[in-house]
Length: 91
Image (cartoon, rainbow, N blue to C red; front, side, top):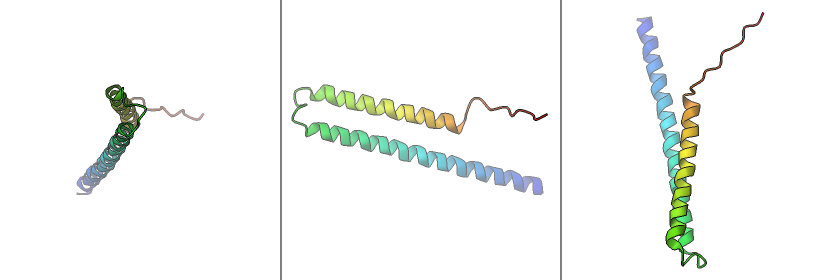
């Protein structure tokens, strides 16, 4: 019974950890989407960018997506690192 109880605790902890990381990913993605939307709205009201509006919007969207992908990849690599450190044995 004790062994099964500990296994359930590990499952509960893993689910809580997964939920916390998903909340962070959703919040971070929403932050980047909001920043991109604010930048697009700002470019729509700019009088200096009126003739190249299509290019400006494309560049804003591309920059937002690239920054979001970089943040997401970095965050996920910190969640599950590929290399685990090997502790040195003291002599």
